[in-house]
Image (cartoon, rainbow, N blue to C red):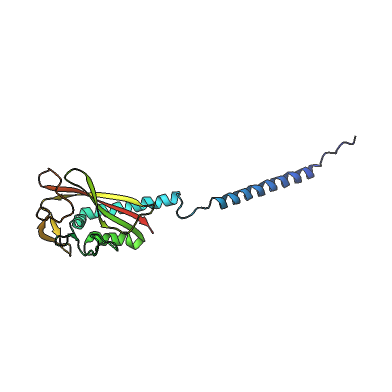
Length: 206
């Protein structure tokens, strides 16, 4: 029987180098195929999209907090046409469908921080009825939110001496206890307090 002669050292080195090159090529090919199969889209649940949602939620909370501090959030809640029984300057609906009312600061703040950044949003006023049940009233409705929408809210206390706001956002001579058309009722037993309402902003990128 003829015995095979061992490869010289130089040939064995070349063989190892060739094997390493082939293995590296296979690894790169596998990575390329895997990346093609798991392509990330803009709407994928990724760290990046979660960061954007967190940022949008913080922005929405900031809008509500700053508006509450200046009193413009309460102005928006009381921006009510007592004669028509709707928010001021709403057409067929009792709520706004195009944009926030620009004659009150809350509406201007929403436009500056959300509309100008291509963010759609709905605004609701949540309040209790005399039975203690929560009800939700649309203030601004821009459509059905996406699955990536975020929600922020802020509470406002309405007292019996609070007056409705006119079209320009100024207090009228009508307070909440002397109108029958206001959309939230007297639902507390606390002296001087009419209702505790919560303003909700539901926002999503478009």
